[in-house]
Amino acid sequence: MKTSYRHALGFFILVLAAFSLSAGAQPIASEKTRFQMETVVEGLKNPWAAAFLPDNRILVTEREGRLRIVENGVLLPDEVSRIPEVWAKGQGGLLDVELHPDFKTNGWIYLSYSDPKPEGSMTKIIRGRLKENAFVDQEVIFEAPLSEYTSGGVHFGNRMEFDGKGYLFFTIGDRGDKTTPENNAQKLGNHKGKTFRIHDDGRIPKDNPFVGKAGAVPSIWSYGNRNAQGLRFDERTGLLWESEHGPRGGDEINIIQKGLNYGWPVVTDGINYSGKPISDKTEAKGMEPPVLQWTPSIAVAGIDFYHGEKFPMWKGNLFATALAHQKVVRMEIDAENNITHQEILLEGTGRIRDIRAPDDGFIYLVYDQPGKLVRLVPVE
Image (cartoon, rainbow, N blue to C red; front, top):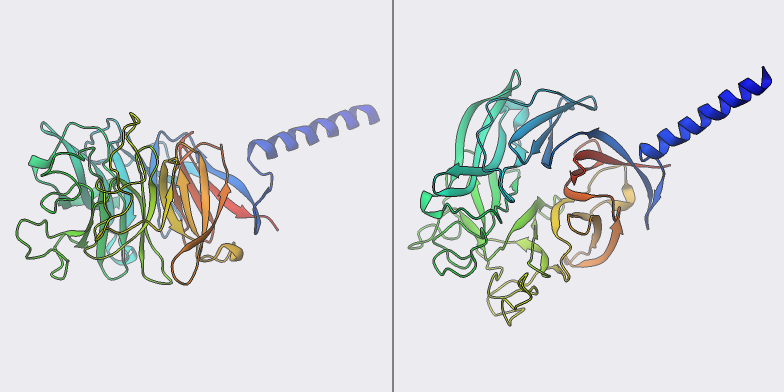
């Protein structure tokens, strides 16, 4: 009896240990705190973004065109219906999801996606409401003219972010077109390689920087942006921060400001994927330098600021995710908005597409591959 009991107890301890390891429960020591990874849900296919509903459900976009719901740690089997058809090719598909600042009152949910047309595709934004697992009351918030649609499969570059005043900021990549004069990111007459500012219903604010300028797209807020992958306001300063894919090298962190030119493709720290130079300039008069650049490229993706209570030592830090380099970068920022220190976290755990720090104080990571949602929790 004693031998059998000991064998059973030993087996139980081994199983419990194996479960803890598989659940990612082993503490991870960083420079300022200890944390562990908890898997919220697995089984996603190329998830792109997450939004956190007031009832604790989580919306997750999958690039192939599915909007999924996570409820109490379970991925519901039925995807949300009535999601528009998307251009699920290359880097295109269903992209960002964002809640209206007054979501509790109006229920608006914003989706960005690669809109398919015979002419090709371009980034489009709609809003709608969630009712009985269907996306209803849909309205078009932004769409580009058909003349800008292209069959290229890269640089849709969309992230959305509200400023708390009813303005929606969003980005569109250069769609890979950096040479055609009328279409590149330096030209104000097209929507490629820009950051935009509109009202929550799609109207153009009268005080946008290029309103009234002949030939300029009036919704443009900044230009010369290659392919933004992250967009977040710092609630302490009100500044809008952006992460931007470079080519081979020249990934950037920028502070996006009204009417400014961020240089692409005239200035860059990167080179072409072929190894040939893009530009002989890394800076130029009238073009904003990045706050930080990474060469070689880390394939920077989503960003977010941490202002919660679970990780007090990380308050005010900016976090960025990386796809190719499979890591999270924690950045410390001084009073002059300089990045003074970087720490690498979670290197080699998978391609991390986005990061969110919602009101519950935890930090959530959207893994493109393997497709899952995890959260970071503090270890006492």
